[in-house]
Length: 328
Ligand code: F6P
Image (cartoon, rainbow, N blue to C red; front, side):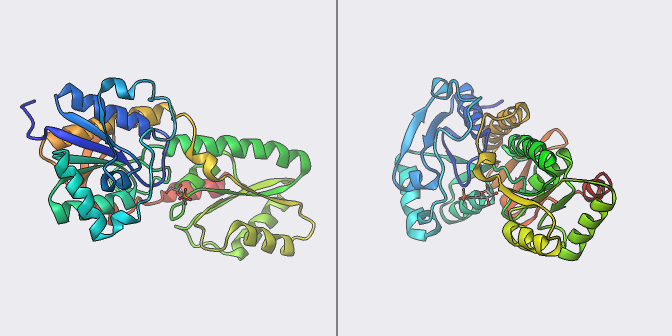
């Protein structure tokens, strides 16, 4: 590859952390070093840009992190970066360190910030999708999603053991503020009776009909997986309404919460993160900016931020149907 015009880059992790962010960081730092590009890590997301928290990184700064959850750079949802004054300070620090381009690892909030920063100050930016929610358009999977799915599935498996022993109904909430990918896929994998997600119109009538059918089919325990962002109601409201309708049911609620964001990344997440971290640096070297590196059908592709932010990955309708059919 011919000599790159990008000589110095900075990399940060922002928004909700996700397993595999460290593997992505490692890939960015090592790819940059391989191509003789200087690399700085920025601590605590955009806050580090504003408060001049830059650390010089080389291949050895990222040793022994490929298997670590979280992010060694730390992450934040920076309020200050949402202000023009904050972004100006951030830009001044980029100028001070002679940064040519930024690699921003995070979700749609992170990319929105990067896009505005690029438009205001012209600094090159490239995104790497790191979020457990898998709600970013332009990549089949986001970094951390596979690990979170497996964490959720294993937790629901354990709940199933106790649900079965006690003939109980469990409502299990999984993460996904606006998206049902974790709920749908972990629900299918763990054999849920019903799966409630924000992308589909759910009703109490349908939910109760599902319970009626399950009872008639002779089921003595069941699990309903609910995405955090479900529109019908929160998990406590849903469980209360179900208890009122079926007073004999022994119902429990389990909220899996941030356990889904932690842990050692799965093999799939480590490989994805390595490919996308590498891809981001290659993209910058090829002159790309204001885009996100993603993997679609096993190919590295670059999607403009404005598309990645505005569009959303669609829920697979086949999966919805399968989840219903297999729950009979
Ligand atoms: O964006 C990822 C995510 O884990 C969402 O699924 C969840 O709603 C949110 O982050 C929680 O954010 P916080 O850790 O700031 O409470």
